Image (tube, rainbow, N blue to C red; front, side):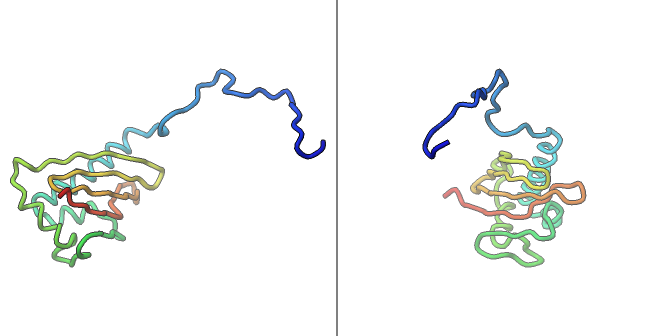
Length: 138
């Protein structure tokens, strides 16, 4: 067939009656619950200044992004010590799971005064936070 000519082969176009998937692919509810629990545990430990609780939610390759990378006594740097200064009545946690794959996920956590963009990895059957980028709401 010469270049530029189109020949119809009798192939059906369209969905052929099959539903067209829209939106994100379905996610297993157990993964959502586990991810939400990891982020919630992390946030509650942050609010109470519980370094061990925060570390339990973090992957060994965790990277923190804002101000400083922290030390053993302050694993989250300066912002790691700010949670316990929040009055208990203002300690809120809103978690939105953006995407879940087999071994990785991304979420956003909104804590009083902060928005944290999180990347999580599943290792040894548990979801752990690998990366956190903090942004102040102010």
